[in-house]
Structures are given as C-alpha cells and as structure tokens.
Length: 277
Length: 277
Image (cartoon, one colour):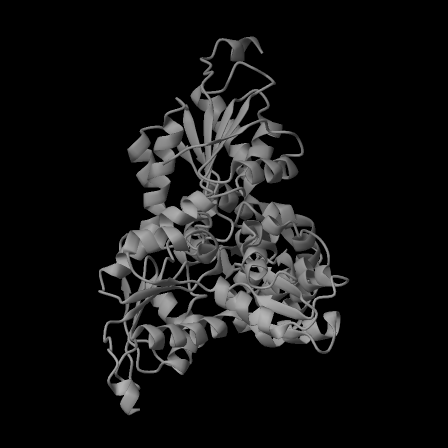
C-alpha cells in the first residue's frame, strides 16, 4: 500500500450518464468495485428512451447531459448507455475535455476474452444494433471474431415495468434469442444496461437455445472493471476506500425514479434532484 | 344535399397530433369517415413516448407541436393522444385560438352510451391513468357510472414492435385485464390510440376474462365520429367528398415512421417530412 499511497489521488466525483435508469446497473457494479468513489448520476428521463432515435438526436441530447454533469466538477464521465456509447463518445470527449468511458469497448473486450469459437452474439436496442458499434469494437480487438447482433426492443419496457421473471419475459427473450439459433455463437453480450436485470432469464434461455456452455457477458460489469483499472493507472482514484456518495439527478419524474432506483440498487438513494437541460 | 350546399365550407386541413404513431389509428378512422378532408399529421417521434412523463413536460411538448401544426393553416386540431388529451387541451385551445378536439371525451361518451351496468373499465398509459381523465370525463356525463382504470405500459412497445397476435401479446393483455376481474365492468375503453392495433387480442381476452358480453370501445373511432358531427355543425367541413390529402410530419426518423405508417393505414403515405420544433 505504501507505493499506492504516494500516487496522486483525486477526490472529485465520477459522472455517470444514461438516457434513463438502465445505467443504474453500471452504478451498482461501480459501487461494488470502487466503494470509495463519489458518483453523480444523470438519467435523462424526460427524453428516454433513446434506443429508437436518430444518431443526430442522440448526440444533441448527450451533449446537453454531459454539460449538466460537468457542472458537478466531475473528474471523468462514464456513459452507462450503449446507445449513446455507440455514437457520441468522441463528441463528448471534445466537448467536456475529460476522459469519457463508454460501455461498448469494455463489453466487446470481455466478449473477446470469453469466446472460444470467435463467434459472439449481441442483443441490444434498435439503435445500438443499427450503429454496428459492437461488430466494429470486436473486430478492432480480434480480427478473427464474428459478431451477430439482434435488436430486442421489448426488453427495456419489460425491465421498466418490473416484469423480470416468469412466463412473459421468458417468451419475449426466447423469441429474440431464437433468431441467434444457427449462428453458432458461444458468447452472448448483454448490449444494453437494462438487460442485467433480466440476466437470470436471458442466461437460462441462452443456455437452452444456444447450448449449455454459452457464456453471457454483462457490459455493466466489464465497464466497472475497466473503470477501476483506468482510475488506478491515471492516478485518478479516490483516497477513500468506502462510503462513496451517490447523487442522482434526472430530467423528469424524480419520485418514481427514486423508487425504481432503490429496486435496481437494493438500497435507499435519498432525494432525487430534477435538472433542466 | 341542397341544404348542405348552402352552408359555409372550409377547405383548410385538419391538424392531427400524437406523440408518435398511435394517432395514426385516429387518422385511419377520420379518413374512413371524412374522406374529403385534408389532414396534416405530426408525430413527435424525437420525444415519444409521452406516457410516463410529468404533466408539465407533456404540456411543454404539446405547445411546441401545436405551434408546428398551426403553420400549416389548419382549421382545427385533433389531439390523437390520450396522454396529451388528459392534460393539455385547454392550454392548446388558448395557445392556438382554434377548436381542439381530444380523444378522451369522445371515448368517455361512447363508453357511457355502451354500458348497461354503469361500470366501465379503462386501459391506458401510466400517465393517462394517473391523470384521472377518464373517471372525470365519465362522471361529468353520467353521475351513476363508475370507472376502474388500469395502466398497461407494455402494450405500446408491443404495437411498435409489430407483435399484434400470438402468445406474447395474449399473455401480456391477460396479465393487465386480469386486474379488472372482480370489478364487474361490462365495457372496456381502449384508452390509448395504439391499442386498436391490438383490438382482436384485447377483445378476445376481455370476453374470456370479464364476460362474453363485454363491449370494447375504441376512442379513435369515437373521436372520428365526433369530429364529423363537429365539422358539420360549425360549417367547417370540406366541400370535397373524397381524395383528401394526408401529409405526415415527424420530429425524428422519417423513413422508419413511413414504413410503420403504411402498416397502420394500409396504404402508401408518400414522403414523411422532418420538422424541428
């Protein structure tokens, strides 16, 4: 520890941005991995979901959200949303002039590490799939890997409705994953930060449909791991080892967001603040 | 016809506004009932869905959309969206200084006409149900009627995904309508303009769950009927008896909207124009 104690430390919070509440699965993983970091979360609940919007619109929304989080003097930004990570990371890096970490590269790297056959499946929103971001990220890491992507637009509304187990989510997941049958993938990436809430169902269906040894990769978990390594390398980690604060801001409906956030995180979240972008 | 021919006629188009594409079910009914009227549609696809937003946000969006349609020199506005009809009609009437017809009052009137027991069920979005607009509209029409409302947030994503028949929509509809079992309703209002696309499933489940004689009331159809009567009374009807034009404008993703619009309307819709609000 002596060695580490001499490194620079940075007490500023980390900004975490998502179009809605899906990014809370990333917050959950970050708090587990980095319990001393202060976090400021912004959920753009007035304009969620981004999943079916054009990339021009997503970039415009993301810039406004990035500027709102920058007012909290954050040391870096985590874009906890696959849709935004697919199209807006570079714009945000230039706009905010700080490190910006998305969820797609960590997810792609974890998938490349997990696959043995080089055939990777991805499920995500319409916009993430249309962007081709996962195939691009995977092929930049492993020239021999192939990615098959499937849009699964009903999974986000299912999570937001809280239908996480039982017949309906199972049938919906089956219908989507069935489209990967015959693609011979051995690894399935949850390419949307809402999906970890459905992980038990997705894992069960994937193993039954695609083969018992199918590996499910959670991009939220992969992102928290890369974030921890990044902060340590750059000397940006907090000196605190625990009791990191979490401040949640949204653009609409703070009460109902607070209630769902408590379900996602498993603990109370205090007052949720409304910001006007 | 001689009598009618002496009445004033108005060739200006009718504006039809929805947060997305659900309002196209209202367009379909209007075109069937009033084939000579020119229509300008605005779908606010950049910000859809409105269903879970706060009423302040909905009013703000509705005003911007109303102003956009007013630029087309419309003679009146039909708000083909239950969520907006529940909270923004009065604001729009003042803002635009023209007649504004929503979908809730026509739906409520049709329900009161249909019910024999005075017990009416309504399914709608979270925001429409929370607004209490249907109970209020029904009780202003019939003091002895009772309304039981159920939020059914997954039905809109199902329609947008095009899953209109089969196991998944049936199970989802069953789960929602099951909450009305024991409420002794004899009439069920489709309190969202997306739902007519699921009408066969909803009708089947409602009859099985709530009783064979359950009547399903479609607010889109009721609205077109009231619109026809209103135009005739006020001398605002078009002189044309057919070949009314339909112009579709959206705030995002015109291509995919055009494709879905053709599925909703059953005919080609020409170029969909993007407007910036």
